[in-house]
Length: 65
Image 1 (cartoon, helix red, strand yellow):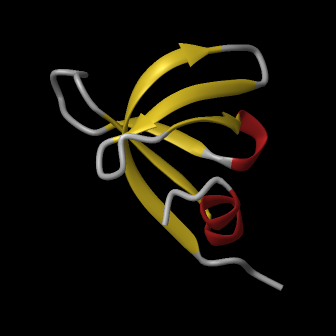
Image 2: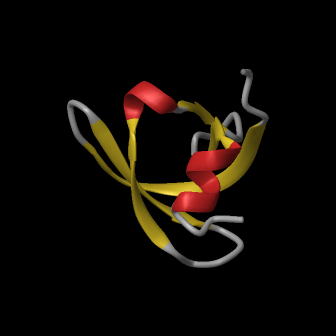
Image 3: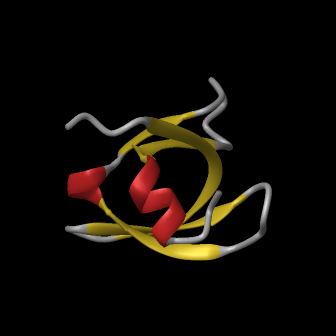
């Protein structure tokens, strides 16, 4: 079963070997996300923002949607 992906704009706070800590631009919520479940890319060419693509189930679990 394929999961729908959710795109969220975030600030990258901490990057570890297996997870990242991010702050959601919309909710202000800070969460840890496993790198194995997400795709993290720069939102802007200047590198100030980030976009996280993650499965909808994970976004719901982390209360980001």
